[in-house]
Image 1 (tube, helix red, strand yellow):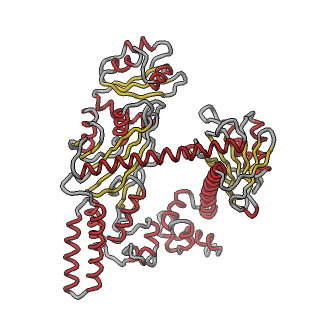
Image 2 (cartoon, rainbow, N blue to C red):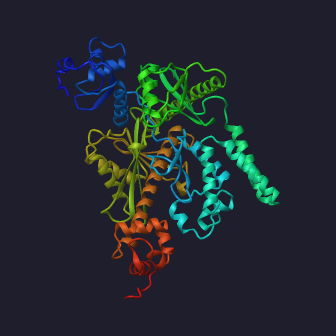
Image 3 (cartoon, rainbow, N blue to C red):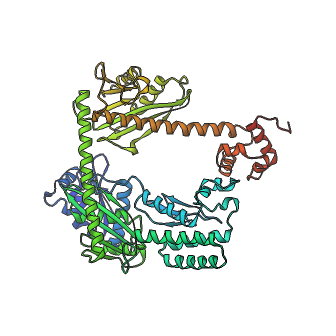
Length: 608
């Protein structure tokens, strides 16, 4: 790494070979990650003349140190650059920020596999199909497969402990393998047909169903024949609705990238096995003054670095560099076809994706204007110096003083910033003391916040003058000057009749009309803080209950407690279990099972 003031000397030592370079500011914060076929040539290009691009000009002015990593090929540099950008999200790199990963359909590894939608790292030996562009698409596919093949969706503990069919069986969405209403062989056939359908082998399924329908009809089993007929009709209906074309690549991604008023939006449309499974609109960060080619390259490296690309990609922009296309092709073991000027049906797909991108941009702009209006209204009614860009709201949740949790939710530019949400477990106070809990939460939030945590422009408290006074006292003790807004519930907790207390030197009461846009924003933030506090409190209370009833029993440690809860699906399942059922759990045995049963049911242990 270079040292401040030695950039020119360090640049002179760089070799002209492939590698990745990283720029840091004076505080050691990563500013930018880039790749190059010729490191020295690329790095020198930033400093030899003043950049015309204002974004690059600002970047160069902040560079204090440089770090490089040499690699053997540009493809290796591409992969390293992608990983570093996804891990660190540097300020000056184009980032396709996505709060959640793409969902898959999962078939579990089990004698009677469970089908479910799944997010996260893929774990063999389970089988995965996807990815799907959004949860709605994955759930729609899951519901259809349930109707068609009657697969179970319950978790393992529920499956083990069912004694009679559940509601899914009653509404004809499950074949009830949990209670033996379908054999392993017949269920395995349903799984094979599910996999065939997900792989696009619908005709094989239809031929098999028609053969079985004719056999049932010949045997005068007309009720079974009618059920098979309905399944055939359901498949044909879905194929008619979802199959977009034949005679072309069955797996296709359509990338429609447009730029409106210096803002990019990319529509990703997924077609799998000839079926349109959905689309997603993405807005890149840090793309000001970037070219369309740079934005497209950022998406390709970040998205296809995590998800395998299809055999064909259709876009309204030219293909990326040969090295990037080769890297993507190596990921699937075959050459990727890039189509810029499609014809026929594929042209219709691209035009549809472009229309979706334009509509997404229009909705995005309308939402942004709405949010700006709410913030400006809030500034006016609360007499603030400027619109509150960052707002934080606190709420307290407990049950008669038990398992107290304080929530802190953060809104940036009028939108939830969920990665900044925090929950605080409150102990060491008088049970039920909401003022004391609020004091502890605020002190923990702002006392040791450090430079990385920005102060809010407005602090919201779910409570009236008392809570407002506590917040004001804490901020004064910490020498912080932040406007504080208390939100007191209206008469009979009537929504829209809340009283607002604003603290700016002194407490001032405010009443806003229910239709006021700023008031709507306050209610949304307060409701989100309440939801987050209640969810945290419930989790903590449940954990405490399970700990106090099981782990306090002599002989029950963390491992045995987890085994019991997993085996019976939670504490209620353990309470319903018999001594014999508990004794079958690994590490429990008959003597300990009697002790657990006695403790949970308040009876005397027969062995004293």
